[in-house]
Length: 317
Image (tube, rainbow, N blue to C red; front, side, top):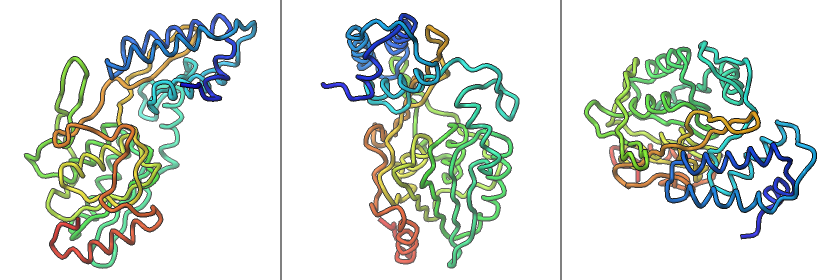
């Protein structure tokens, strides 16, 4: 396979410190990547590209090198859930837990994003509408979820708008999923830990009125719906609980583990587990969540409303 411009530019020349960082990244893929059958192949590809690089006397600025390495590793691994950054110093999460780098920046944006809750309203016909733009695992998020589900608890149907939602914390994603399921329901997703096998996620303590598993639920998606937002859509769709309307989502199913140290003062986060539907024995990695009704994102809400009006107790499919 011919390397892209991004990969070719990164590996054109490497200073000794950068070469050491690449070797440690290859080793991390070998030992920690979620797909055992691909881990060695990815590591071999990284080392093969590095072997072709000319020795460089000058190292790139850490931020620029980390950005280029992230893009190159995503291309080599065909996995969008790979992140490299210089080891951060100092920033913390809004709730006081340790954090840093892009994670800290994401949490710092939570108040300006209303903790991921963009809109809650009633639509004519007693239809609830909830638009979530991100999934934060913060106490302020839980309070806002509680207010939203309290407002919408007596509606006849719900539209959950995940268009533009790039994901976030699994702790928020699983609470949203279970808000639309009944007690005793089968988990919509289980966790594949590779050689360690499958693991069911504990049912969370919701802390607000559960919408339950019987009233109609439509989920809106687009190409920017990603990661944890896709987990909500795919899990509820594959369980037969929700109808998905809109565009195919971004296709990132693998779950990022904690950052791991690399040589040269960098750290890498990569997928170490992956969710799987017990119904399909698969997930949305690479393919995205495929809507039941594939339409342009801009018109997805109107289409969902039309389907609800036509449903009158049917399945809507």
